[in-house]
Length: 274
Image (cartoon, rainbow, N blue to C red):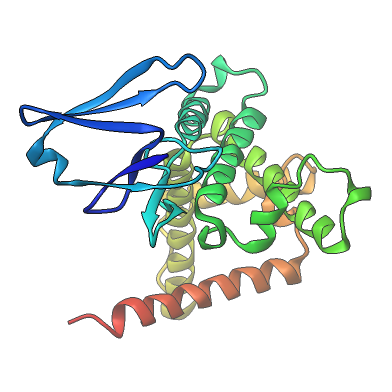
């Protein structure tokens, strides 16, 4: 058997029983089917192109060989780390379509989009292995989502639970995006709340510290907001995210994230800016 590979990067394009013929400067590669003994023309190229190829004799080739999946290094087949399975590309395309589709075109759209994103991550894991950007528990847990707990170790069950919780979080995020608003809508809502609270705090500070009265029309707006908010909370009609979480965990999470943001900005920006 022979392999035909590119000399510049050792990528193998053809492997099997090949013969090479040079006729008037045109090199032709033939492959003979071992069952029918029919000679098939695989490729033709000029001599100057042939200079970019090499050939070697081998005793066997990998059973999953496809063009460019392997390199020819030190007289052996080595898996090409940048090879992308065409089927994986198709899976990516399907996942991207599902993620991009609007909710009115998908029944159970939130779960479908979450599953599509997880499918993309699984493809990334397969391609990148231990270099995947996902954390190890999530990376391994995603592979175990359909596994029976009775077949798993305690660590694997823990990883699976982490992946399940991530899936639930994704479903919640997609439902929020579809039923409440996309990140731009939510960002605008947050900005309105911040502006309102900032105005109240500044006015209160000026009133308490500097004895500057709040103008009647602005005070009436603040009264309306405060009364509506308090009435909704007291009646149980309104609950926000903070009402659902343990206060200690919530405060610690917010403070640790804010501190980490400051640390990263210091390490990657302020300490390096020129």
